[in-house]
Image 1 (cartoon, rainbow, N blue to C red):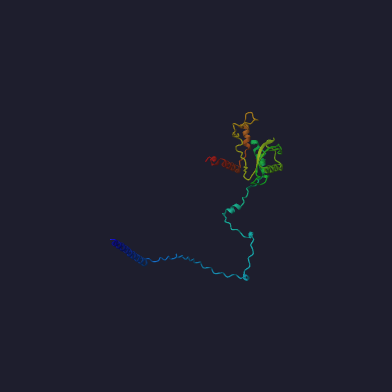
Image 2: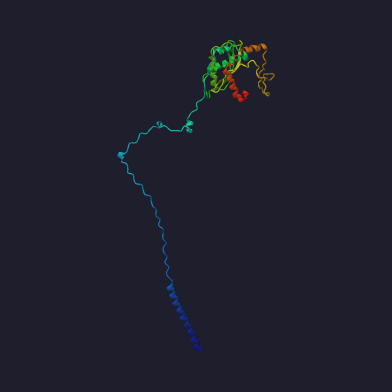
Length: 288
């Protein structure tokens, strides 16, 4: 019985050894036959190629001995600048010429003869001729800081000589100086129409934009139209508060004398009055 057991153990060990040997032989064969070595190839780097443009052909260098002489420099003032007519530079460079107005002609001998006999409206013609005579001796008025106006208070004696001259106000010392110089150099004037001192105020305009039109006389025999008075302003020197007395209608004798002195209005005076009315009130004043 002991012997059989030993044989059985040997048989089992022998069987295990045989199987082990077979497995080892078969494993080694399959490994050698099926497995191949893996070869890792290096990564290829791409090559970039850039094509350069063809270089321009070299220019032949000039010979210093044959180089032409440099032209002489032209002065800047001799080169005309072509500037368009409508260019803003042309508009800005053109200086504006100031406006001017020549002195009016002095009153003629005929005008002084009429003024020496016209008594209506405080010797209206005499006062106008006196201002025109002064302005004619002041010269040309030029637009600028010297232009302006000056208002005088004048008293002329019965013989036509200046008795009093007072400046009420002035907007230009040049205008006042020229006006006073003209008054001092005035030629002899005819006697006043009434044979009494003539007192009045007169504004002399020394400006290229002033208009000193000839007066009209057709309404001199009518009462002066009422003037606007501020009801809240009062003259302290007047008891009633009125600055100027209201003119009364003329009686029959005074009206006859007044109408006898009225001249035939000139066409220039009528046109000047119409233009003045149109400038002030527009076309509505013509009644159309």
